[in-house]
Image (cartoon, rainbow, N blue to C red):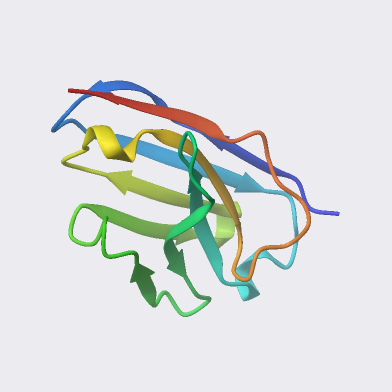
Length: 114
């Protein structure tokens, strides 16, 4: 079983920035692709960014150019730097493997006011 602990969310005005962190307990963290997912009110879960073990990244069109995913394998941690935030980025953000595994953390709430 893997434990995932997300942090760094909060309330920010449109145009602002936040940096999310996700600490994973799994010792195999470094070999797995990891991603940030979000669930907005009334919408389905969306994968917004992913990073593989070699550091290659992919982004959803809606966040490309504004969000940056990174990882520190020594710390079993993945990050999401979010810039130029928009109200439509408001959601609960989760990290998980890609494809996602069965264990989810509590998520971290991001609220962007207009």
